[in-house]
Image (cartoon, rainbow, N blue to C red; front, side):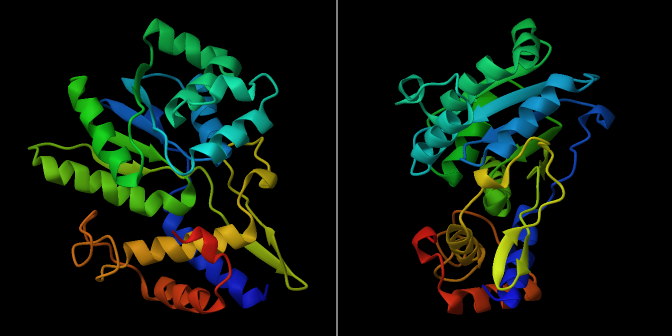
Length: 277
């Protein structure tokens, strides 16, 4: 891989990931929900569970695990079984993504489970959604059904999908036409970045919220390229995209010129096309 390609990947990946920093719930007032959306990138899951195990609780907090059975569910099952020797494949076979997350939580995060079981941290599960748009609409529906009036909603997702996921949550609330909606923010928990040595791309990630994260748990380079190319194609508001000029799944998203320029160069390369859909 040429170093110019790594640069373009970094530009696109940083924009897609949005915010990787600590969500600083301790400094907030009002009710906050953290929604962990299903993906096979386990550093996001561990960051959430570690954070909620240790955080000083000064205002209401709710954890929601979100995800049914979709195209990435087998990847999540495989990742969980590989990462945790105490979880057998038979225990998560057939489970939705939210159920797989809960299995890991119950086995490895006892303090968080005690907080949930004591009611210190609210707990919701959404396990019917099969795609990004449904993640948002069904999660919002679950919150409203529970009668929770949120002030802040923090979404945690695979960093390559964060920008589209936030747009989907904004669309879900807009569609409802509510008089008051929570502030929606992202927490990607890390920013995917590469460095190039002798035309070889290597991960260069310095902001993992999950301090036990391993780059071996991330994407192959080809898949990473394909995911980034596919995401910008979906976010681009034209007849092929997901915005108002296309499928209408999300609202209009402004894509910066430098991101578009990098995306166009990555499209020409063609690597990782198997992951674009």
